[in-house]
Length: 135
Image 1 (cartoon, rainbow, N blue to C red):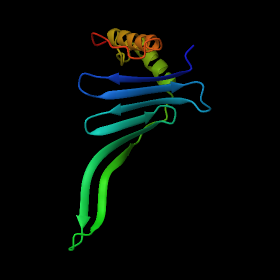
Image 2: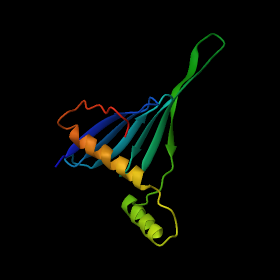
Image 3: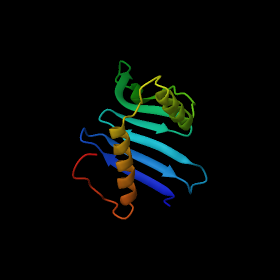
């Protein structure tokens, strides 16, 4: 079994995502960071937090050119729910079986997610694995 994984994924639109999971740390880690053109998005799945770091260059000066205020960026803390993901997944499955709603993920999307997980596991032996085609 793999006790610690840090996978960096590059996408064709320029976004770079880092996925981290650890079973060997003193505290569990389940996080995702996405490095976008104009922002860094960080989420912690265990603590149900989502932060968006944006750049902003604002500054204000007094009449004599002295810098009195500077803002190099800001962080948005997005409100999230503390609903357990496995509970939500099973609830969605039951509602789909009962015909009450459509699945949030179709078979092709689920297959692609499993392929990605498989390639991440394979990259343990080949840390710079590159895929010829997108998954």
